[in-house]
Image 1 (cartoon, rainbow, N blue to C red):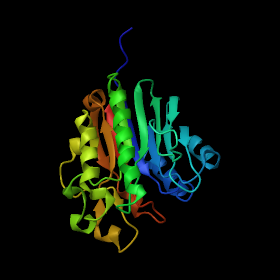
Image 2 (cartoon, helix red, strand yellow):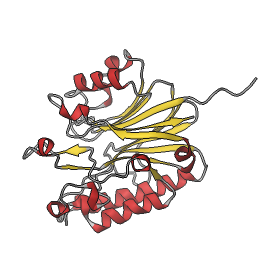
Image 3 (cartoon, rainbow, N blue to C red):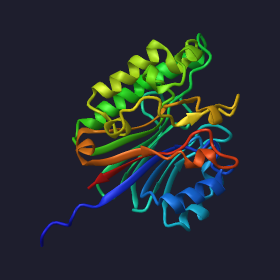
Image 4 (spheres, helix red, strand yellow):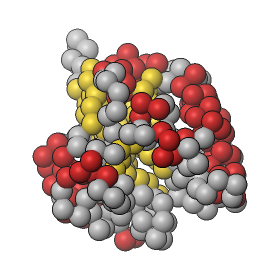
Length: 265
């Protein structure tokens, strides 16, 4: 038999800032955008409280790694989800639900990532952030060794470049913009990952997050902190990428909006 023709897969990452509070927005966007795979962050609920039935009714399979009140990550897929692995290796005492990876569409390994914020500077939270990125580096390095198609997507809580924030001076004392945070993010890219959005969009000041305070959305005072990082094999399959700002403009919106890419696999 001849090989099957390539299939175009649309994959998105979205920090929903409470999946239960934003459920109407999430369901509306899933119906409109029709992504094949979605990586969700900041669920703010345990697995048993996740609105599974509503998601499954739209044709998605689901894997989640939840936590009461805080954090939580999930993977939604129109294909079966295989070999789901919750938790970031490297610290058996870390109970925060910030990492989940699984295989979708038979050959695409994806990870949903909610990297720690790290504020305030000088606190244990910043130390935890840096240690967590070091663990993520080790995890990605192990994953890239097998040359599989991989996407590491999520809220990285790092302002990688000054062009990724409306005014870097405002964030000079913020954990997201510190040299230590930026250096570790660059180290991830230097492993051979490709920023899917930037592969197709080089214009500066394009954002995925706008704070609820001080009219940030209306003023377009945003940050680009949500990324889809593609392994070399996945990068070769990329055909498009973008940011869907529509959900951020809705009533009771998350402060983040989806970042998406398309792959031909």
